[in-house]
Image 1: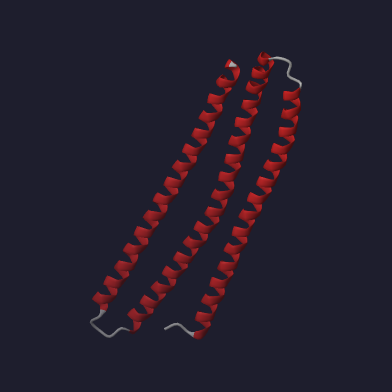
Image 2: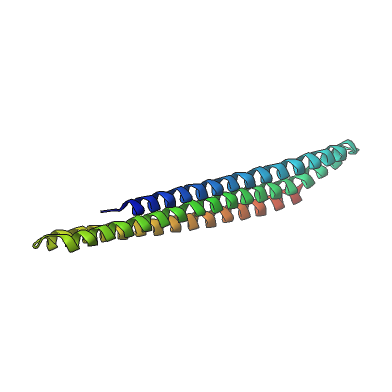
Length: 180
């Protein structure tokens, strides 16, 4: 049986976790806002410079050359923005995943201590039932660890693919800009 002190300690730990995750979420939002403000400022300044450059164009060939020269930096900035956005989201998600893993491990540990306590105080002849319960908890733990590993592997693959797509997109824009 759980004591009042144990329940209060668990409640306190849950509240601390909640506030920690809330802080992490706000930090993620704060980083997104900062990224968007920087991107907007840069886009406004670049738009003004591009408009002035367009006004100084004297013929169609010069306009085509100018347009081609503007496309490469635009693609690079879009890729950099996407990369930063992904890093913010991945970092925040990692914090949430770690908190979930910690909570699950703690809950399993507490449950196992309850099972052990029940086993110690169980009447004679109930050893088989206690063993079955321990095996079930162990199997559930192993299954959860397998799922966590699979999710991590999938996340790693997704990150690798994201970087590859961004790299390929950047490589594809360079020849296109040079052809013009």
